[in-house]
Length: 392
Image (cartoon, rainbow, N blue to C red; front, side, top):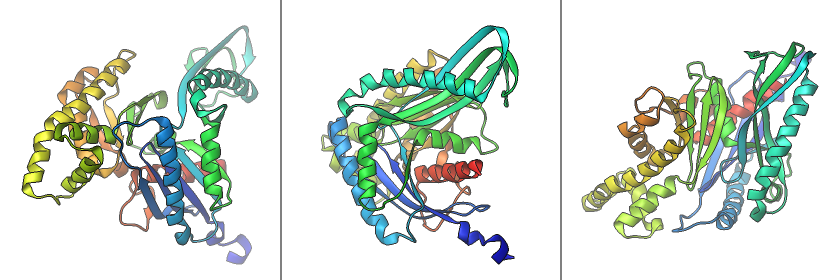
């Protein structure tokens, strides 16, 4: 039998998966076998140093170095040459928008794939031109990432399969994302210096959305909060599709800097202290110092979240369910901040967010041969496996 139809082992694919954030880079070896859950074989995340002030050029330099360092860890763990590499980006390395395109004619016409593709292509061109101005400092040009039609209405009715149907009016909602060409070229060059492999680029936010959309009990209206070092990506999902993607200029390093301000120390020293505090490795006196600084530090971060939610809620109250992707170290502190009753005025049900751990939601969707799963790599891996199945 195996001789005739081929062994499942022959069909297995081994991929390199990279997750590029604003304070770290992770790399993984991942194995995908049709009909089985994907397996994460090895993961290494390299964090960059925290600075008192940081700009994009400095971040760009440190991310390049982190990627090189990740590759040196991945090379000795190579189970075989990789079939492909996937790179997932969080802000500030991409831009995304959900755009609504409307089109109408006096006489009925048939809605076709070509017609939809042309509409979306025109809209994507406008999006690229608008974003390009903001990226001038990163060099010229940009490359498309995701380009997904989320929702189609014909004559005001939603259709899951609108192709071939007659209509006079089309409303099409499309998620679009892209990255600066210079950043793409730099990352490709560094990966190719170790592994000569085809590379696909995606946004981490879309991978998180896609992965949650494949879990049965996730409600159609929710928020995804992907918290990194310097930035947080917020995805607002309504009726099962992405309505808005927002990048907030805050993250783990905001918490560290708030503590540094309270303790009158350098952020790098404080980061180490907070890490030891979370692990219960500090003496009682130092722990007490951190506990005393905690209230004001977390209040500062909370006020930044409130300011952001206030501006977003003007366009519509936020969904009640929130899926949080963050490094485990600060997870409890984000729960404290985001579950505060002061948030309720911005939430659709008039009470504070119901917060779900993104990592726990994804557990069981992949297998791992490590003790600790990286929450971002898990979502990325599930996305890859499901995408590959959809293409078959």
